[in-house]
Length: 154
Image (cartoon, rainbow, N blue to C red; front, top):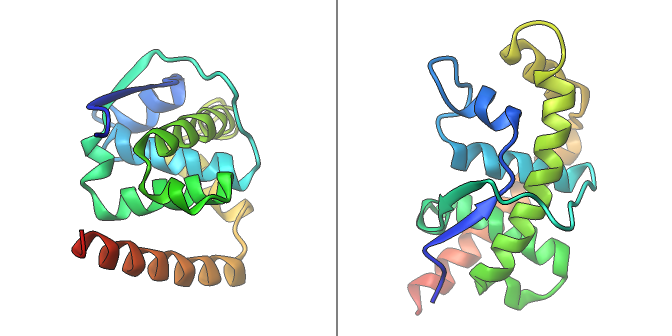
């Protein structure tokens, strides 16, 4: 049984980019998933992240795209296929990389002078590899299809 809530590190980047009238991300959940992807990509894992933020697991677990990202990150980090179906492992991996990614985003986007959206676009362009992104999108789509077929057979 997956946990109903989990705790994550909430820093200024979360508040600036995922809440309020000028939010770039439509929710903290989407920001957390994005930050975890940044943390993974930049290999910035935080062993013991702060736990000053709280989130319901079903915001991720019941969203097919976000749950696939969480499962893929857990599998990539642990190299254990069981992680794909283990919410506890997914939460641990998600929060560790999200803390690292949010720290990077705070430093490289929020703390930089200028508009946060402009800074985020510049950050993404600076760290973009088109060929690699296209290959990853194909892999992510394949994983999403596989996970969907597993869920349908439960």
